Length: 421
Image (spheres, rainbow, N blue to C red):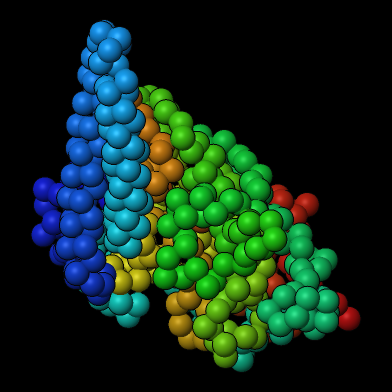
């Protein structure tokens, strides 16, 4: 949720952000109007309540022969206070609904537009060249007996899979490498819940335009998370944190679930776009003044991972219309996938400023003892999809795959993944 004071005092800034996102500016006017109605209703309620308190004292000290009439007036006033309180509550609900339709305020410099309007910030690494026709990751994985799509479909349906043998070991190696990197930067590891309450999902901003992507269990009123970001954001909901000595950093290891609604016919081969995968997610609670610097640090840690895995990649500054409601800026890191002759997203990192913290009531103390919302940031440090780029980039003509040196200690020193006869 954006800052109500900012909305009230600078609606043009909010409208500009909406324009960059390609979203309606009329929603800003509706939110401003709802805010004015809310404040008027609260003022009316507080005025009547003060009148009620004063009248109560008058009744208490009145002569006995006047009390009956005064008590009747007090009952009428109490009914007016109750009605005013209900109007204030309704106005508060209407304002919350109106303001939650607005995306986070986009940071200066974020490109306008949609999915194809990103800016490439840099390309890193050498695009792999082969003296043979490269195989795609699924063919490689099947030769290694590492990926089993057919049995995944048999057991769970389309877009499910088994990682088997060296495939399972490769994912665990990747995740443990990422965890060690996160620990070195002061992250506390968490294995998070993957089912969360609606208020936590709503608080992180995932129940907006892309809510159809989320699995929901109506009988339990719980959502399956598509990223541990949700549980990590909810971890400190309704708390006051001490970030005066630096950020609170968590690394969440979890299985993730996405319905992939609207993606029929896209990336149906292999494990690029699946319903279930594993991920190690960085999450930081920080003083808002330091959020942009933390964002650059997270991006640097992601790039360090891809470089150590020998992957060619590029970094893009995602356009405002492709941010999602919570992010004020998002960097995507895309690795080169040889058989697609294209860069494909492996990871992203988002600066959500105070948007999620306002919804989840996560604050820190500032000078004078007052509290203000913290900033939250997130970024993926490893996930199942990375296996695609690793297998394709490091494949050999005989179907084997050279293990990146950084992963070898996590695979018992294994240097080459060999096809299964």
